[in-house]
Image (tube, rainbow over all chains, first blue to last red; front, side, top):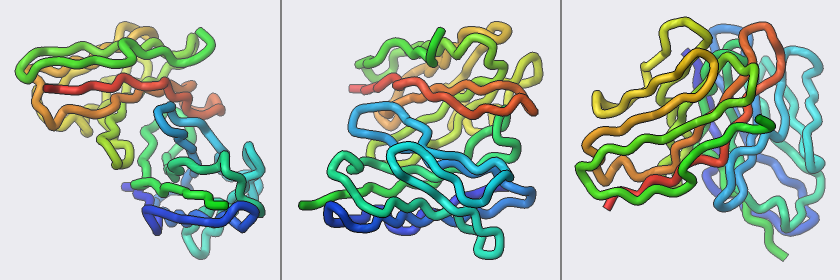
Amino acid sequence: AQSVTQLGSHVSVSEGALVLLRCNYSSSVPPYLFWYVQYPNQGLQLLLKYTSAATLVKGINGFEAEFKKSETSFHLTKPSAHMSDAAEYFCAVSRTGTASKLTFGTGTRLQVTL
Amino acid sequence: GAGVSQSPSNKVTEKGKDVELRCDPISGHTALYWYRQRLGQGLEFLIYFQGNSAPDKSGLPSDRFSAERTGESVSTLTIQRTQQEDSAVYLCASSLGIGQGGGYTFGSGTRLTVV
């Protein structure tokens, strides 16, 4: 069985500050890991994915995430927050990276303040 | 098509009525998934189709929920005798088959409101 835990349902940062959204996973097989973003009243958009290649994954909009097997973590970071980053962020895990179900975390709502 | 298409985008129905939600996956994607997102919550897996294999129905919350998929094309999610707790956004996603790389593409969802 696989699961994902996102620490912090709400995170607030100032514009220009570092964004850190935490994700820890549990998996009996090497995992495939994903971060999705959901803007208000919109669908899910893929930010980045880890598929057993490089452990540091760069995504869209300046986001990146590092896979750390020893810590079973896949935290999402961005050096400098922008107001447009305000959204809900979901971490997800799957067994094969495709053609198997994604298991999602409960999400973290990111607020960016002036 | 270019993306995953879901219809209707919004549906308001009376408690006790049946509803059908439709999903058109990306052409060539053999895998199709349905998820439910209740207000303020994460995504809850409902059902998964992969080619001609038996679907994984492990996430369906009750026997009022069912889904069908014709080949590798359109899928419909049916909710019978709707209840107020069924109110949610129902998201569909599709992906290529195992070993084909790529990832999951989500539709914009159907917002279901049961009154």
